[in-house]
Length: 116
Image (cartoon, rainbow, N blue to C red):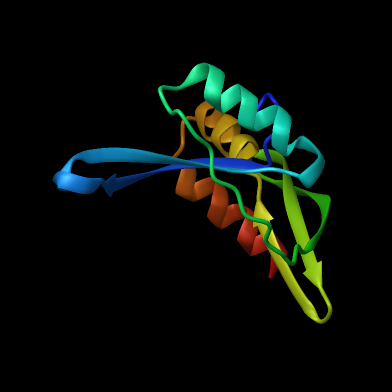
């Protein structure tokens, strides 16, 4: 991710002769493809990289801040056409839970109560 990937994940797979393996998937902007493919070849045991171009729809993202009894918590606001989603930022909730010695769920619930 530090190299510019949009996302990356591992998937356990079976290779020929039933050998277990791990597939690395990396989502990148087209302009970054060759640079990140080179990085994968350099840093892993693979001897080849497959790629395909896909289209994707991404919701617009913005942030708002909600004041709770646990302090200010950022909330991600994602919108697309008439669809809107609001999600508390995990790192803010975790920091508040640790600071106030409460369960993470308590912080999330406090944020959602303010959003209703």
